[in-house]
Image 1 (cartoon, rainbow, N blue to C red):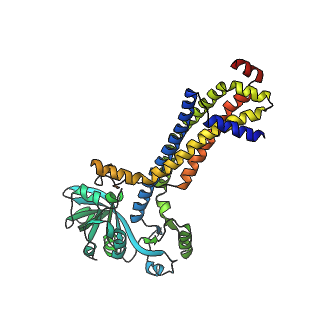
Image 2 (cartoon, one colour; image 1 turned 45 degrees about the vertical axis):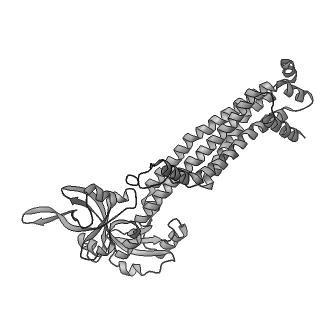
Image 3 (tube, helix red, strand yellow; image 1 turned 30 degrees about the vertical axis):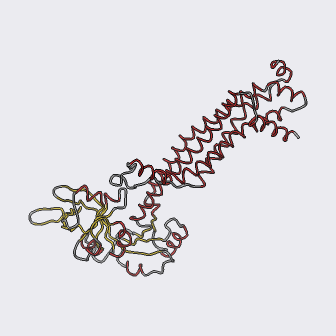
Length: 408
């Protein structure tokens, strides 16, 4: 009976207060503030998820999903390549080195990868913005570079580049760094740092360039789903005597930084929800002062202190949870429709938030995760429940006689 009474009176106080303009305003403000805080938090987390997804997708276009790279390289890589691999996994040899890329007196450092033409076509074929892949013939020393690197050097396909290797050539005239002339065969655009610090060429040319002979530095694996832990486990089982490095291992620092950034931003934006919880406290304190006589009457008719406390717990939770539900619904809709809305605004007003010539994306990404929505709603609900404790305790502590007399 006491629970039903608390629910009935608490909901009535929450939604049916009349003739109390300021109190109704404070209660409505608390509800709107809670909804706004939840909406903004869900929307910002979705945008951050979108950026993280874009970075991960573009990174996986270039870096190997997994690699086998023992110290000293692989001499028997052809036999290892024929090992029976699980479905959804393919293997390819690679050679890796570093060099300075020079043109017209300017030079920039880059990581140089040697891959088979078929692998280069699969990974970069859809990202070429100039040149073509057929120019990457063995012995021609044709290379592919990123768009930002090509822009820094001011080069176009057909230009001759000078590679300076971190190795000395000793001759009677002295010791000089090894250099090699290569031809720019194409320019690719993936996005991010990959467009500024990478160069690709034919595997056989890279073996000659870095003096590997018939050896390669390792095998790189492409997975149908790079996030599938079962595929990674099956890959490790296929090569029991070797260590398999995954893309999560290679990008551990970047992924950790993204997670920390998301957590910090979420924590800072949680202040909005905390402010809304303080508004719930203010609304309930005002309600307690306004309903002192009603509290005294209920106590005189036998309502216990826990029942009085529960009334105001119900009222505060009704305000807060309604705001949370409203904010979650609007936040999910906003997160789902934000990219299209921003794109329409850009077309309407003729501007671009992300200039594709400057940024690695051309649209505002948004990726809604159910786990984020649940976490935000649970956190806001917890703050709402905590916000009702003090006003409810204060109401329960009122003496019924003093409450009635003070209202007369």
